[in-house]
Structure formats: C-alpha cells, structure tokens
Length: 290
Image (cartoon, rainbow, N blue to C red; front, side):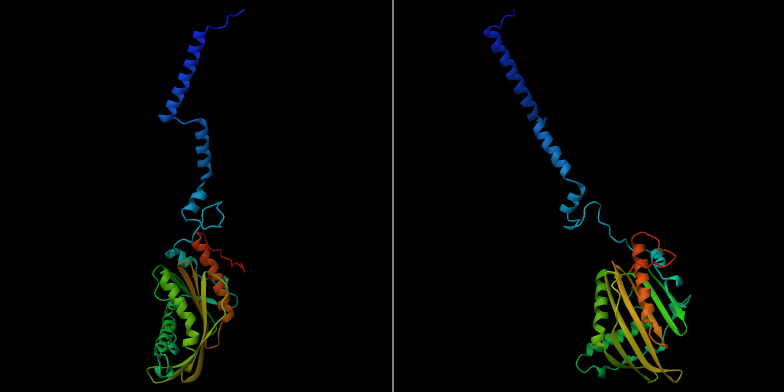
C-alpha cells in the first residue's frame, strides 16, 4: 500500500510545475512562438499565393485568371519583322513576290494639293498633302522607331505591298486617328504635278477585318494621265496595330482595287505578326483562324 505524499511534498511539486510554465512563457517572449500562433502564421503564409501577390501589386487585373502569369507581346526584332512578312503561300491568286518592292513609286501620287478646294479648313489641305506623300513614300504610319521589313507582290498590273515595323505607341495611335479622319477631310480634292497636269483624288472609308488591337482602312482613287492616256490608280490600304508593332498592306493599281486580296493579306499578316510577338515561328503554310 503506497503512502500519499505529505503536504510539504505536494506543495513543492506544484511550485515546480508553475515554474516550468513560467519558463515556457519566457521562451516564447524571447523569440519562441506558441503552437497556436505558429499555426496561424503558417496558414496566412500559405494563403498569400504568388497569384494573390501579383494581384495586390496590380500586375494581374481583377477578374483575370491567376493560374499562370499574364503574358505580354514581346518587342519586335529585326529577324522577327522579316519572319512576320507574308509569303506567296499566304495569298490566293497568281501573286508573285518581287525583290525590288522598296523601290516602287507611282508618279500619279506626286502632286501639290490645291488649297482652293478647302475653303473652310485650310489645315485639311495639309492632311491631304500628307496622305499623298505618305502613299508615295510607303510610310502611312510614319517613320518606324524600331525594326522594319517590307515585301511586295505583283499580279498583272496590280501590286500588293506589306510593311511590318515597330513604332512608338503614342505616335502609332495618333497616326491611326489621323487615317480615320481622312475620309471626311479629304473626301475629294485636286492635286497638280510639276508639268501642270491635274489629278482628282477621292478618299473613302474601307471595311477592315476585326484583327489586331486597332485598325484603319482607306480606299483611294487618283484620276489623271499616264503615258498621255487617261488613267485611274485605285488603292486599298489597311493598317493594323498589334501591341507597339504594326503592319500596313496596300494593294491595287491601274486595273482597279484589290480589296479582297488586301483583306486576306491583312488577316494572314496579323496572324504571322502575333505568332512572332508570342515567340513562335509562323507556319510556312497559311493559317485560317477566322
């Protein structure tokens, strides 16, 4: 039969237990952490996922899936601009690629705009002059600020020209707004060349496929003379922005416009440019994503 500890022994045991508790609390205060507090902190750390941190930092817009980081188009490179250019396989019909498209110039686009055609808005005359000059120089979107590449195709007396380039974003948006204003500003006007021959120019809005981040299209006719014979130059042109890069396609000639070929070129060209900006290589065979 065991004996019950005496009262002094029981008191000493309680004192030792209390001392152990005080020691544990002191350790926690010196840098240790109670189990309950430690579990709470671990749970908070687990809840702060990388996606949540990106959203809090404003890198991922609200409502966007957070399973993977948002990807942005890369900057266009010289080799990327060349890879994004159209090939003969991208075009229907008998278009043949040429090597001297950068030297193409049409004399029917040379002339000084008659300011008297613009009685109420003389600044419109400057915009129409800018249009003619840009069509002649093939720089409708202005001077590229980044890499650029150009190619051209011929079919009979018609030509199709494409340029892919990197631009300053603000300047590119301004140029697209300028193109959008031209059907109203330059509805019809007269231009005179150095020999005194007059050309009648008409500018209307053209339909553009829903591709890229922004786009504008124009239909332009120039009536004058070529080789002493009456001639009409008809051009369809489209500009498409993808990020800070863009492509322009101009098609037509003395045989008339090339609206369908330009539309096809714009669709295929935009897809090729997007593929390049996403880090891929365009397929040698045309795609049809639309």
